[in-house]
Amino acid sequence: MPADATSSATPAPFDPATLRYDANGLIPAIAQDHASGEVLMMAWMTAESIARTLDEGIVTYWSRSRRAFWPKGATSGHVQRLVELRIDCDRDCLLLLVDQTGPACHTNRRSCFHTALRDGAEVVIADPIA
Image (cartoon, rainbow, N blue to C red; front, side, top):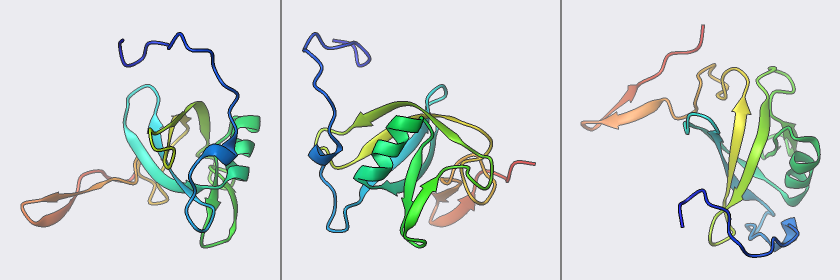
C-alpha cells in the first residue's frame, strides 16, 4: 500500500490519553510544512495542548520555560495551522503537518534547523527572513 494510502480499517476515535508521555506529561512534536516537507521545528505538547490544537486548528505547544500553553504565533503572528496530526508507531512522538505563516524559528528563520555540521564545523545554512 502506498505511504499516503488510506487504510480500509475502521477509524477509531482519538484519545490523547493513549499517547506515551514522559514523566512530566510531555510528548515531543515535530512541525513539518505540509506542502514542502521541510522540517520547521520541534517543541513539546501535553494532552491539553493537543486537545486545544485539534479544537482550534492552531498549533498550541507547552512552553517548559514559561510553564504555560503557547499557541504558535500568538505574539509574533507566525501562526501554524494544523493540516494533519500524525502519531509515530510507538505513540511517543507527534508529527504535525502545518501551514506555516512566516518563519517558524524565534531567530526569524524559516526553520529552527538552520545550522549544519559539515566537516566538523557548525555552518549556518539559512539567513533570517527579511
